Image (cartoon, rainbow, N blue to C red; front, side, top):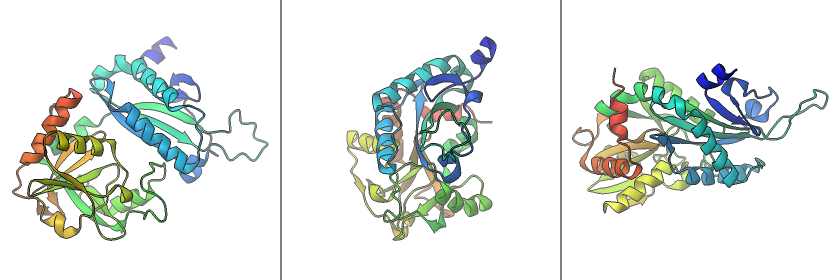
Length: 309
């Protein structure tokens, strides 16, 4: 057993630190049945979680919106998350850095005669390796972004600001894009035809030296999105959240994606057309990447490029 624990990632599951293989969710769990749950995700930089408090605060906003009580305070969730990171540190050299995730379901829909030991919310804190090798070439060449015909669910139906386990809207929107180009990033438009977000990524454009990003009302307010806005303020670049239509996107001088794992990923093509002068990264994107990397103490671009195959 000791050998198994030393070689397998450790997770926190309903009050215990266990090997990942021991995390087993009942088939009647509402998250498995309906996507009725919430999660959040950060990454580590050199083994240290990025803005963990901000991620957990966002996580609890999602849980309050869904009216799910995980049975833990935010401080307890942070403490358990930090302990999971510590218990897996000996494995980090093999992978570079981690995704760190917290997941909560509403719990089991019990018929009443199954004898479940636990029917309340299932809580998991887990880690997975970041996909450095898979994405490395995109930091060298730039990403390709394509809009898709499926619209992002409107705030009047279900708030996109909640990070829930139900990703079908974005999964199905991504399918036709991936069929055309497996390496492309799908971008959904909002109900009004403006840029919204991708599956786990926010988008920014640069025009005439200024930064623009979709309004928070129509997208998940990414922690890395906020980090980028913070870095823009630090280097003196104006950033305006609001509507970005297809005309604005077509005339962008620069474009990039942000997410927990990506940090900042420059975009070279938008719907098959070159973005700006085609230089990757553009000057403002470069300044933001440098400021971001300096703030977190990790050259994340070099970290990805190291995995080029």
